Length: 92
Image (cartoon, rainbow, N blue to C red; front, side):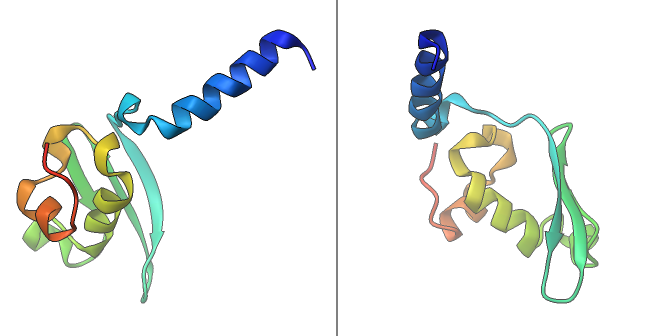
């Protein structure tokens, strides 16, 4: 294997452990819930989800699950302190 590629692989392993290096600005996922699949994501500083609960509350189990999974990789404004505390995420 070429030595420069070996160096890149080693760096990738290190970066994967240092998640604070990554901050999502936007993303979209298909979230398979218990009853249906939903278009869920984060864009322009706002969460969105196509489930019926989200429009009234501005959050849902799908967006909260993503907050828990992505944690420190989300921008500060994407993680509400109240939801973060309830999900057991460290405060920033």
